[in-house]
Amino acid sequence: MLAAVVIARNEEGNIERCLRSLAFCDEIIVVDSGSTDRTVEIAKSLATKVDTRPWSGYAEQKNFANSLAQADWILSVDADEEVPPSLREEILSAISGAPEATAFTMPRKTIQFGKWIRHGGWYPNRIVRLFRKSRGKWVGNDVHEYWDTSGTVAPLRCDLLHYSFSGISDQVARNNQYSSLGARKLMREGRSFSSLGLVGKSISKFFETYLLKLGFLDGYPGFIISVSAAYSVFLKWAKLWELQRGERQN
Image 1 (cartoon, rainbow, N blue to C red):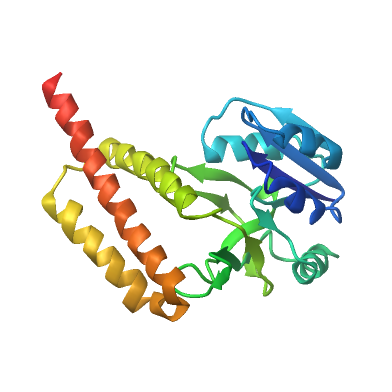
Image 2 (image 1 turned 60 degrees about the vertical axis):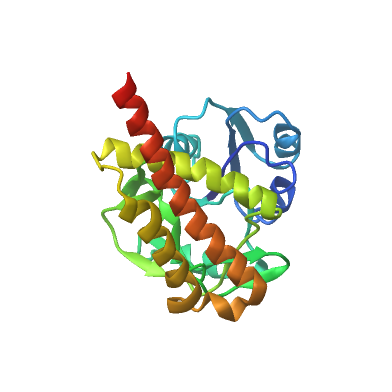
């Protein structure tokens, strides 16, 4: 058996496409964390099971969702992702019989501004999304969770499709969200604010994504992505300064 597991919140614009692409799975589990749009309504029409749970962080939310599945093989997909037919067939082939691997990575291809992005560090962006739940768990902090397994991890060839941002405004909003999480992570790690972090790391992030990782080959979308990445780093360090300044004043 294969269970598809999706966590979601306010994803009415994406979740139908996602769940329809998972129809080949024996179970489809959706865990919602308080949507105020039609996400739950749409999910109930397409999923095997829909549950609601207050947000507890990416790793904990995904581990809870895994626990609802009867199957041991889990395909973990975000609500803004889609499994195309080529990847579907490769997944079914990978788990048939008794594979030695207990987890599989897959390349994720993201569309932005109507263009599939292939540079700037966005591709191939290999991630573990197919695994035996009995052989690992999601771990990590608020910003980057990952599947920790005691078994062998093997690669799949076909792309998972990612519809990440609806536009520049959405990308800016996401930068604001993730930079806050990143600043709190730096705070927990005992990092101190520095001008090098604020200015130097922001500039180096732009050159890393746009030049070293060839973001310029993606045209204007690549340039906007690189500026956005640098801005996110700038916000993270600026918010760390704000947090530490607030502590000193209290």
